[in-house]
Image (tube, rainbow, N blue to C red; front, side, top):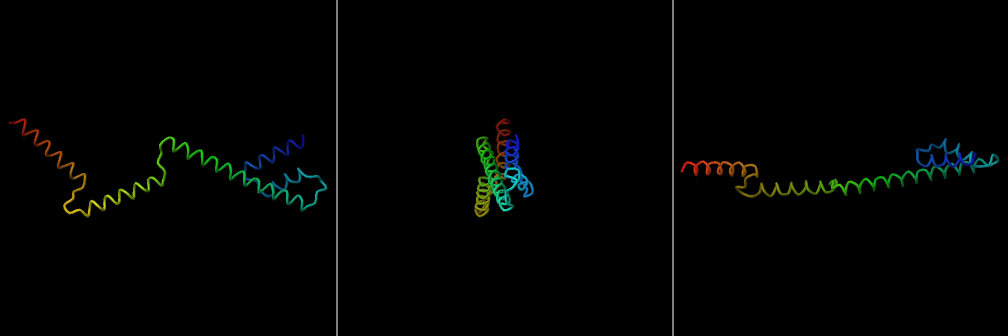
Length: 125
């Protein structure tokens, strides 16, 4: 039964933030009581390394899954948004360089007034 608890502790250590002190405790529990101090220290260091690798793998798996879900939902990435912002700035600069160019808002206002005036004039005639 003691070995099963050791396995459980080791697995818990791989998923959480394993501290050096906790790694030492787990290593002592896994090894014989007569194990040399160096062996316990090496086993603890191996556990710390194993824990960190597993944490990195889990983080990577979660990150990739989130990216896949966002892509499937059609959410734009930061890179895509930055590309669009750049394109808009370029178009705005190009529009300002054209002589006599009006902003899209000004064009809409002018068009709207002409349409209303045309309709009113047509209705009176």
